[in-house]
Length: 228
Image (cartoon, rainbow, N blue to C red; front, side):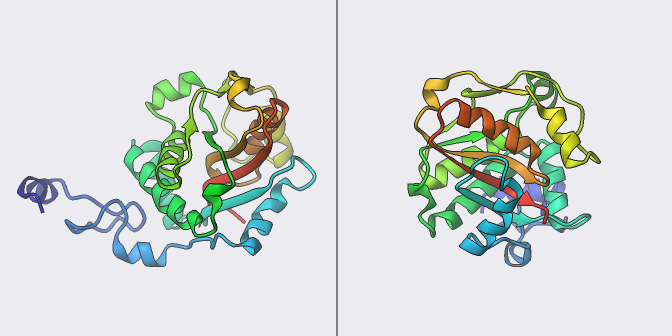
């Protein structure tokens, strides 16, 4: 262990993004205990079907996978808060690599050609400094060895928060928000669309619809977390 890193940990202790306990010098982002006990979805056919039901009758989605199960005030909510408001870009990449390695056990890397994160509006991205979905997509790309792109799909409208809205209102709030900037990158590609959390699915539905209209061959959905 680098002595400089030991000194930094002494004066600026790193904490686990899930349980907020102090990390040991050999732990990174998530402590060993949370690695074992975080509520994870198993990337199998049963879980895929449960999550895919959110899109049935709305848009054709081949695969829907989520890494962690969201519960209010639980460890996964704390992780998402760190990603969204605490500038934890490396944590998002770390989670993407972790999830990607698990997806490879199902040969998911052979089912997609391109990974795309749900984009933020440029104003919001400038204010936050990053897009956590793109950071997660980068980690997935590294572990799955599948390219990702941040420019093919863009957000053209600034929307108000989706919190506490019904699914119908969320969908209406998102209409006309996304555009495919570079259709040549989309056409005939099997695409994994990535976001931080799957709740009603309205945002992913609208973004996915634009990809399908642009000629996406098959659409899959990947998220860091999902609420059942």
